[in-house]
Length: 279
Image 1 (cartoon, rainbow, N blue to C red):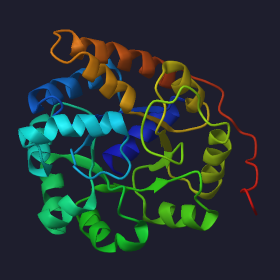
Image 2 (cartoon, rainbow, N blue to C red; image 1 turned 90 degrees about the horizontal axis):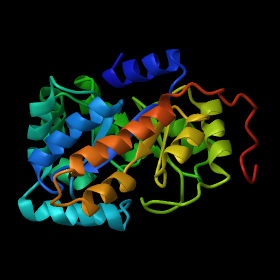
Image 3 (cartoon, rainbow, N blue to C red; image 1 turned 120 degrees about the vertical axis):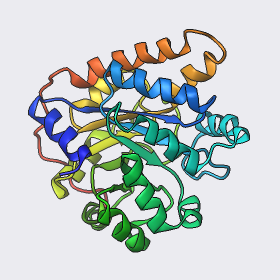
């Protein structure tokens, strides 16, 4: 059982959902990222996703793109993010790296997997690597017990969800919207039925991301999902607080409010899911 599996198992036994914050490593610098990771873990985060800044992202909205553009001129790359993770290896909760496939390909699949193990990385998310083409990476990742997390979307068919579930380890990352990351004032009414349909097909934990930005939204989604991923709202606090002494404290306070929402015991949804649209 991986560290991520253990985390979800422990939370399920307590009737809680996982809080999974996302930040871009190196925004505004790696020393601040290290301090933020420790602060978020202390404030109640269960797993932390570290984004590797990338110049040509597919899934990142304007807020995350701006964070990458602040980090890239400082030379932050896959190697330096792994070094950061190594410094945190014995100090914190499971870390997941989110990056695109080209940097991994250039690094070398075997070398990257080995570095992940050495640095204590628990999982990897590669948004532009579909499960159909991920065989060589999965083989290397499983040799070193690093989870590979795949994404589903509102448009995913039952066949697609089964394929993702078969290849996925750790958790399924369900994208709440058909679009890029970013704060949304209102969540889609179709989100709950979509997650329930995934849970009917797969026994893997389902974590929902893209658009969740308030404790109220986190509490609502926790009712039917195993994990809540919050990125843009945190990065926006960092952007607004750039250069201010209390920026890390403000992020910590926000994480505390989200954790309270995710960890509060709530009656889980048990109603059968509606059929897939169009079937």
